[in-house]
Figure 1 (spheres, rainbow, N blue to C red):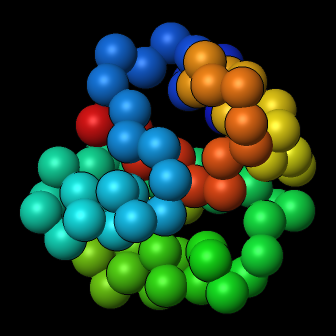
Figure 2: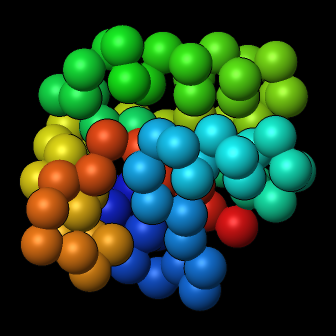
Length: 81
């Protein structure tokens, strides 16, 4: 389900650094996190989402998440604007 959401999204923020900045700026509506991503990468983003009250959805694969974003590499975190 979340892969389709990412594919249909008009505006995305891809990656932990960019997503973290976008969350802090208040421009993200929800966040998608890959379960197979390193928790050291995703932990800060998930914690920040909890603090800001943003919904966090999980998908199984970084590779599939990256593909849904239209990139050739895996993505650990994606923010939907």
